Length: 105
Image (cartoon, rainbow, N blue to C red):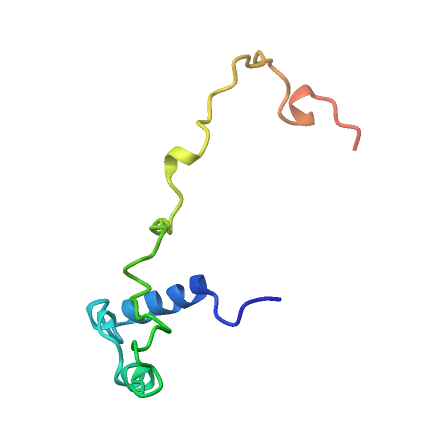
């Protein structure tokens, strides 16, 4: 069964939103007010405090740095075109049939 939230997909979505200018990576360093509100616990029930979900910025702890993709092909990726080593000798062939003087038509 596939997990509900794939970290790779979430990181790609966050990275696209940062590149689009919706927010900055520094804004993701602080938890949202909703996260703070939902993790606030009652001290009577949790005497040692809440030890559940830990907040972290997924773009800061990205384990694999992404490689930039080049939009145009690099000329060094193509093989060099070398002239053929053996060229056929030039012969004096008639260009048209009229040159020979013989025309079957």
